[in-house]
Structures are given as structure tokens and as C-alpha cells.
Length: 222
Image (cartoon, rainbow, N blue to C red; front, side, top):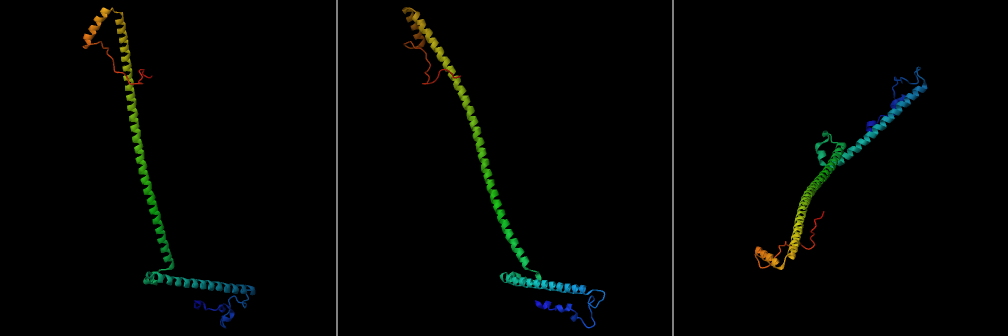
């Protein structure tokens, strides 16, 4: 590595020049002062030292990269098969590894997103089925309420008819009893015989409707 920088810094001094060579801005030049010549000479020496130091650092970094590349060639023989002319470098290997890691990470995130999407879709379908079932129950409930109102109205109509018939029957029985009580015994027997013949049996029978169930109101609720 140092073979590239074996130039001695003395090339910038007056002694390194030939006997016929002189500094253009050297001390012998009457057009320039001594201080300016010294400053220019020192600046050149400093710049050359900085350049030499930077080149040495780059050479050391290059050697380090070559050693690391050799290690990668041992771990990954595919790299050495292509040879140096294909331009495989440490940075390309690193970029490829990073791309592979990023690809795997993106694939995992994509799989997770697809799984969550499928799960949300299933939940949405279940929610849709529940909504349809609820709407069906609401329709059935409405139909049952309508039928119940119709049946209640029909029952109330029948109750009013039954109560009216019972009231008429009681009135007729009261009138008949009053009529029999005002007749003489002979006439009462004659009327009773007529009724027996009309009824077709051997005794007086008053027509009656079947009794209502116990606790069944005769009055129709308002």
C-alpha cells in the first residue's frame, strides 16, 4: 500500500531541484517577498500531506473491502464463479440481502392484510345474515299482530251477538212466564198442550242457547 506513496515530501524543497532549476516564487525572486514564499511553500507541503493521508485511508478501506469480499466469496461460492469482471461488490450483496428481507417483510404484511380482509368479509356476511333473519322476524311479528287484531275483533263481534241473543231469550222467557201467570188454569193447560204439540215431545221445553264458559263476560268491553 505504501508503495503507491513513496514520493518523498522533499520534492517540494529547494534541495530536490537541479542545479539549473530555481523556484519561480523562491526567495531569490526579487518580485516576491520572503514571507509570501514561505507561506506558499508551507501550503503546498500541507496540501500534499493531506492528499497523501486521504489516499492512504482510501487504500486501507479498499483493502478492508477486499478482505470482506473474500469472506463472502467463501460463504457464497456463487460470487466467485462469476469473477471480478462481473462487478460483484459488497454493496451489491448488501443491497440484494436488504431487498430480500424487505420482500419477505412485504409478503408477510400482504398475507396478514389478506387474512384480515377475509376475516372482515366473513364477519360482514354473518352480519348480513343476521340482519336478514331479524327483518324476517319483524315481518312475521307484524303478520301475527295483524292476525291477532283480526281474531280479537271477530271474538268481540261474536260476544256482542251472543249477549244480544241471551238478552232476547231472557226477555221472551219473562214475557211467556208473565202470560202464563195471567191465564186461568184451564186456559193455561190448553196453551201448554198447544206448545207440547208444537215442540213434538211430552213436556214443556223452553228453547235455550248453550251456556257460556265460566268467567266469560257477557258485556263487550269498550
